[in-house]
Length: 347
Ligand code: NAP
Ligand code: ZN
Ligand code: ZN
Image (cartoon, rainbow, N blue to C red; front, side):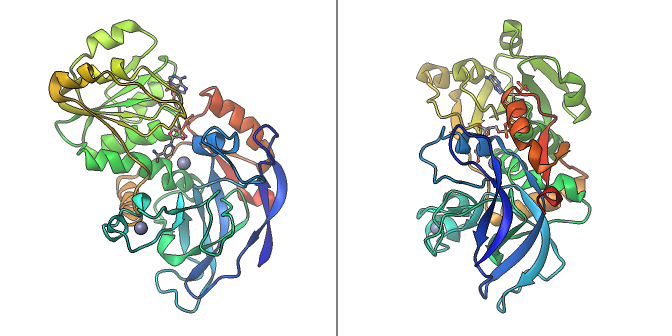
């Protein structure tokens, strides 16, 4: 074991503080990564504030990680010292269940090992990326293409894959109308990726305050959900709605915007239930679905897709000491569009 600098949440209500965490010595199949940047996902905030359930405090969160390989175990074949790599929301899975064998490790039937707050195979609690180093099994380490600016790449490891996966699964592409609800970290990536896939994209944001940005990201239409006229004008319109909102919304109002055989997929993860009226689903044979991050192979596919299409997250780079302030700004939707911690500030 060795000790590295980190930031951790001591409890659900205390601010995050500087501390240290223990990392295991790299085993034969492990990669040691010196972390350069770590994105701040709203899931980090839900987690540390105890909104999703019990938390093993003190906890270091962060599952949007990029850095360089500084050491590899004897049996590692996929990565070499010096490689630019990333780690997302999972660091292991059973590899044997039907879903793992199908390359859908995020749906591991025996439970994947989350990058933080999970119990690892050795019985320790995983600690996330708001730290200087991490040790991860090589199969859960991604290659980050050089074409993606290093400081902007981290949010792809969660916000990127969480939006790419449902957009690919529900076939966002030419001739398809896609709406993105909420233009924060996930939402702005959903817009950029859906546009690159060739879909006609509409942003549904609380206000028109970010309209210029939405259009710059490639959306063709932008509407305020605070205006009831939006819901009348867009009834029966979309093939796919991707809901990225971190709080409960009136799902039925959005379902009514789906055309025949349209799907609304929820990636936003408020702790509260989202009640659905079945009669809203009957009209137009609509579907209401959910989606969780993406598999490892698909995450690599997403990174390569973003490199090929020149897509990168819009970020605000901060020092580690500004994490608590950043959390407050995320909670008031004052984020343009992802905070990324410069991990050099932790060394
Ligand atoms: P974020 O940056 O805070 O973005 C959420 C956006 O939702 C805000 O920018 C805002 O967009 C909108 N919003 C916030 N509060 C709202 C409210 N009360 N009513 C209506 N709209 C509201 O968060 P994020 O990091 O993108 O994460 C979004 C959600 O996805 C979180 O719940 C997170 O836990 C979840 N998530 C899920 C997965 C998964 O695998 N399914 C993975 C990652 C994250 P506007 O200002 O444009 O309205
Ligand atoms: Zn996340
Ligand atoms: Zn499995």
